[in-house]
Length: 102
Image 1 (cartoon, rainbow, N blue to C red):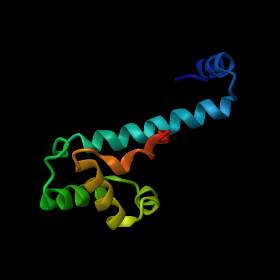
Image 2 (image 1 turned 90 degrees about the vertical axis):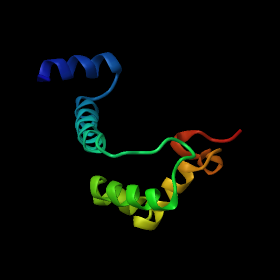
Image 3 (image 1 turned 180 degrees about the vertical axis):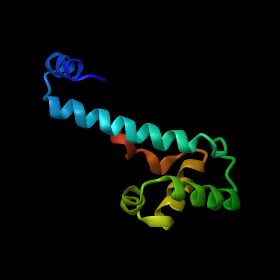
């Protein structure tokens, strides 16, 4: 994306050129992570056994940036997150992703 396009986007969105550039860099970084995760066999909701959960957590730990893995509490936090995602009702996930229970 060229500089003039970034400047037009910044003006049109009411953001600074720096904000737009940072957002594009973050998008590229996340796209790279997701492309690495395409090969992972992630079971559907409710189908995760303890063994597959641990194996998927190990695979995920190799794909995630170390800083992100540290933020979720290391390998134990990742396994806990995968366990919550695999539960049928996902009751412990209500506060994630900016969705508060009201």
